[in-house]
Image (cartoon, rainbow, N blue to C red):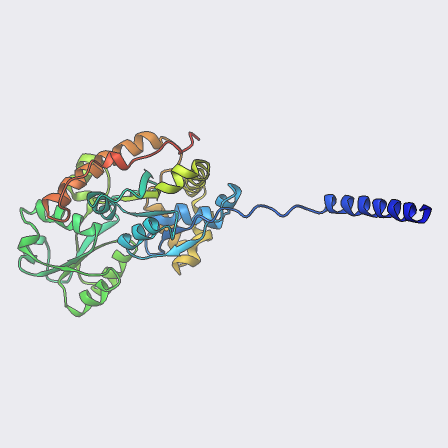
Length: 332
């Protein structure tokens, strides 16, 4: 019996030591929520979000955010709808189209880039104005079509007065250089590619020359940030931290443009100096005055909805404010 008692005591001691060792072992950290971003490296408006990724601002908020390169806005919104990504920065024409279809899978909550003058129409040599293009082929895509229409209206024309060609932005330079189209409308930095393709051509105007700019001081169809409705409703704290990191990214670009350019230049396959030059021609919006800024963009989106309906791009005009949700955006 004494031997059994000793064995029992030793077992108890060993058990206590083992328990002590286990309690001292580091506890594995909870995995960070994975909230991927749908974007691209063809538009400098994405820079605030890309800076937030590169500088670790999302990780500072306890979020794992990676960029999924999705070129078209319509495909990006599908990615948000399917749950493949958590948020995106994309052309609002596609967003409004989904609203008109009754897609309630997302909210819009901010605008971090809006740079009138960075979207325009470039014509081949021999065409000095839009009246010269009457009956000729003019290419555009997504938001740039709105700019094209605004510039046509300035000349008392409409899309019916030209041969409109819906082209991918990456196809435009080759088509313009070969003469397959006589003019093309697109945004920077792709607009510079049109100028290189037809170096003797002429800039016929930019979105800063349109009625939209006169009314709202915005581009024709600026980007808008959307976020998964499910994420906001089920994990509002994650949504808040996501928004905080994005606004911090925009603030950083405004305060440190050189460092921002250096951080993302490799993504654009350009030198930091080239990206810096682009940043200086853009306007980025972070935490400062975001509420008043957002109100302006909500009004512009409703105006754009009317244009899309009038031009038979959407069947009905949605009340865009029903998709606005800024409840999780922190007051920084």
